[in-house]
Every structure is written in C-alpha cells, then in structure tokens.
Length: 107
Image (tube, rainbow, N blue to C red; front, side):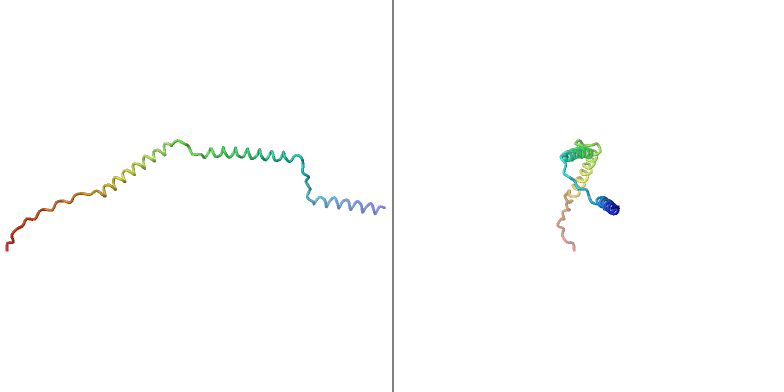
C-alpha cells in the first residue's frame, strides 16, 4: 500500500511538472471588446500625435525676410545678366567706306 501511494505521488508530481511546460489555453472572454476599444483609442491618440508632429514641420504661408531678400538678389542678378546678353547682340552700323574717286592713271 505504501508503494502504491508513493507511485501515485510520483505520478502526480510528474504531471504537475509536465503541465508547466505546456502553453496555457486561452478561453475567449466576454471582455475582448474592451481590448479592442483600447486599441481604437490608441489609434486615435496616435493620429493626434502625428497631426501635432506634422504641424511642427509645416511650411509657413507667409514669405520670410530671408526668402524675400534672396528673391530680390536673384532678380537683380537676372537683370544684369539680361543687360549683358543684350549688349552682346547689339548691332552697330559699320563705318562708311571712303569713296574712291576715279583717278587717271599716271604712268
């Protein structure tokens, strides 16, 4: 009888140890919608964070002083370049050639 009790205790210990290595089985709980709701809320919060982050990098609508000064400088450079090119292609009348009179040959 002691032997039977000892074997039963050893089998019970082995079963307890082997169940420790088995992954637990999850039963679908009625609270799964609560997990889904928190997921939806997390997505909404993420959208808000992204929108706030995008506002930081959004370009301003008005022109900055630096941009205006660069535009003025580029317009001035473009104007001087156009004047230079215009000077290259100006045509001038050639000087009039002196008229050669008919001279009698003096030989």
